[in-house]
Image (cartoon, rainbow, N blue to C red; front, side):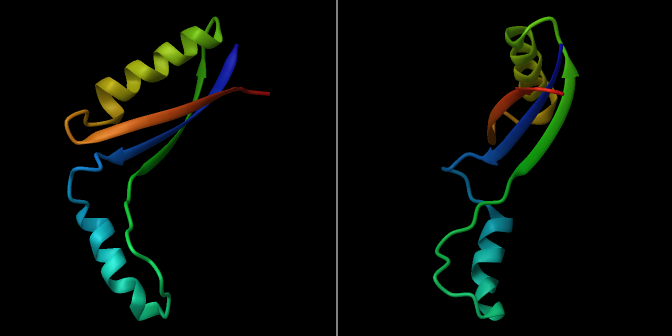
Length: 84
């Protein structure tokens, strides 16, 4: 079976996000008001093949833990859907 994983990786809430702080600080220069906080992360789309949905979830989870996310500084979430 083929699957598509949509993965979101974000810095831990407790950690400073320098990119987000810079955007939040300077966004008013674009005449955009009301922005209080910005957090910047990564979005990854992964196409994969697995015997079952559970096996696909396991593959994505392992990939996130071992290579895609820095588990000391980042958290991740993902959704999985059958590919057409």
